[in-house]
Every structure is written in C-alpha cells, then in structure tokens.
Image (cartoon, rainbow, N blue to C red; front, top):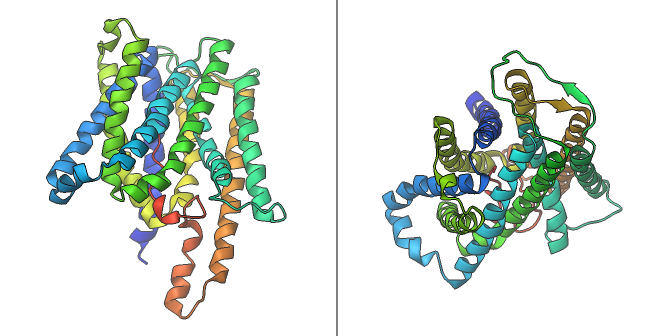
Length: 368
C-alpha cells in the first residue's frame, strides 16, 4: 500500500469535516440574515436533485433502470425514508441550527452512531450481551452521548469565551435561553431522524442496489415533501424570495455540497468503512467552535463545552466497542496466508456500524 492510499482517505475526511463546519456556519449566517429554514430545505434538496440528474442522464444503464428501480415496494420505502430521514431531519436540523448555534449543531451530529446502535439493537441488527465488555462499552457510550446532548440543551451555564477580533462581523449567538433549549431539542430530534435513515438503508439497498439512483429518488421525493410542508407553514410568499447574495450562495453551496459530499463519503466508506469515517466527526465540532468564536462572535458556554465533550467521549466509547466487535470476528476468520493477514489487519475499521446485513449499509451515512 502506497503513501497515497494511506493518507488520501485521511486528507479527504479532514476536508469533508471542514465542509461540514463551513456549512453549519454559513447556513446559520444566512438564516440570521432572513432565510427561512423550511424554504432553505426546499432549495437545498431541489439543487441537490438537479445536481444528480446529469449523472443519471449521462449513464445509459442508469437511465434504463430509472423506472425499473421504482417498483411499489421501492417507492414506498424511498418515500418513507425521504420523509423521515431527509424532510423531517433537515427541517429539524436547520430550525435547530437557527435557534441554537452552529457549534451545537455539529456537536449533536456526533450522537448519530450511538443512536444508530440503539435502533439497530431494537430491530435485531445488533446482538446485545450485557456480560460482554464491548457491549457494555457501547451502552455506556450511548448514555454519555445522550447525557451530553441533554447537558448542552438544559445546562447552558456561564459564558466561557467570546472573542471579538472582528467587531463588525455578524453575531451568530442565539437570542435567548428558551430558543436555545428548543434549538438543541430540534437538533436531538434531527439526529434521531438521521439514525432512522441509516437503519432504513438496509431494505433500501436491498430493493435498489444502485446508491446513486436511490439517492436521486430520495432527493426528489424530499424536495416535493419539503415544498408541500413549506407552503403549508409559510403563508407569506415573500419568504420564498432569496434577497441577498448570502442567501443565494448558501443555498447553492448547500445543495451542490450535499451531492458532492455524498460521493466523497461513499468513496471513503468503500475504502475504510463508516466506522473509520465516523471517527473524524468531532473535528467538525472543533473547527466550528474555533471559527465561530474567533471570527463570528459566537458565544461559548460552560454547559455547551461540557455537553460537547460528553457527546464526543460517548462517540469514541461506542466506536471502541464496535472495533472490539470487529476484532472478535476477525479472530474467528481463518488466516491461510500472508496476503490474507495483510487484508485482515485492515478490516477492524472497515466494517459497517450495523453488525448484520452489512453489505447494505456501506454507504449509509450522508451529513445534513
């Protein structure tokens, strides 16, 4: 394995975390500039659908299988997955981002592996043995994640850091304690919806193995669903008008970004697995906190810091438990030659977060 093979996934994942941090900061600035969260979701998903359309059209194979991929079963699965995992998730996420802070939004996303473990255990994809240290670690990590999230929401605490290197920049601070709690709860709900989306990729991938096609259909369905929801919620048609360059550029960046990040994330997952990719998630929280506090005057609080540390600690405890699961399965595999030895040394972080039916979830995580 060359140096490029070793370091390229690392550089790609670091770059992706910078993208997620920039998306949270950029979007919050646009929301405070007057962009409505529900309308923004419609534009974002619509632009993502249009970005994926040329890929579908340019491929004869995909173009021919476009209709065939949408039977009654696939239609029902993709429609519900789009409703729960994208429409509900995105509206909850960006509303929570508006009411809380960009740092809280990126910190809450670290809940997803722990919540996915809970849902996978409920549905039977994860086998729980309380006598096993690795299973106890996953349960403890889940408790730490949820406790950290609740700490961020309800124990805001005293102001910890508020630097004003650029006094004329836009403030990204939430307006009050009530909106902060509401925002954190919405972000928590968003993580729940996104974890459900990951679980639902199991039947989705079975009925439509082409992930680009399934992603296109889900983006299209979510655009229609989000548009209906936004029309019902926003009676004022003026809210659909993007009035400033910030709002326009944010919508374009978010829409194109979700399509590009999908491909990047899928490639990295295929190379190293979602467990490896999930280990980089806290980096987005750190980048967001530093940039927001330093340049955009976002206030940091003790409760937010303690909660974020709890969420990130819980994430790594869960990942440690999953890594031990893979070590156990690796030891059960025969090792007939040195080539297999080299391959087996790489699989500990290349397995999916769901223990069973793993071939259907290798591309299951895509950031809101």
